[in-house]
Length: 213
Image 1 (cartoon, rainbow, N blue to C red):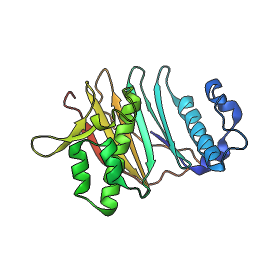
Image 2 (image 1 turned 30 degrees about the horizontal axis):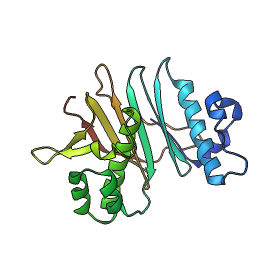
Image 3 (image 1 turned 60 degrees about the horizontal axis):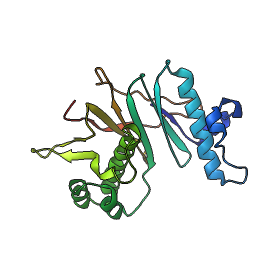
Image 4 (image 1 turned 180 degrees about the horizontal axis):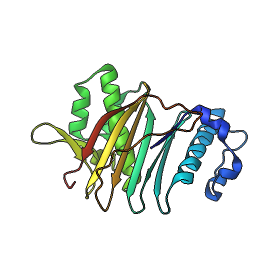
C-alpha cells in the first residue's frame, strides 16, 4: 500500500502521466485543491507503476490532497479507499449506505468513536464497490461488516474468499483495502511512501476474512 500527502506534488511531471490520464488533467482554471489532489494521486500512481510486476493490479484513492494506491499480483480483484474523517451527520448517511445491523451499531456509539466506525464502514464499502464492480450507491448496504451468531463482526462480502484490512492513518484518515486472490490470500499489506512524504503512524483497526475464506 502506497501513501502520499500534499508534499508529493513537487514530484509531479506531465510526462509521467499515462495517455488516458493526460485527457483528464484538470483545466488551468480549476480550483487549486483539485489540482493538488490530481498531482499527488498521479505521483503516487507513477511510483506504484514503476515498482509493479507485469500484470499487477492497482487501486487508487485520493481525498483532500492525500492519496493511497494498493497493489496486488496479476489476476487478483482489488479495491482501496481513503477518507478524511471530517465531522459529518454519520447517522443520516448510515441510513443511506449501511445495513440495519451496521446502522444500529453506529447509533450505540457517539463522538469520535462513532465517526471512526462510520468511516471504517464507508471505506470498506467503497473498496468493495471498486474491487467487485458493484453499483454505487445501490450496493453499499450489501457489503461491509455483519455480526455472526456470537456477536462478532465478520466481513460481509460478495461470493468468494475475500479478505480486508482497515487502518487509521495519522489522526485524521481512514483507509481500507479488500482483495480476492486465486491462491493463498492471507497476506499482510505493507505500507510505503515517497521520500518527500514521511509515512504517518499507521494503526491496523481490523483484518477480516469472509465466510468463504
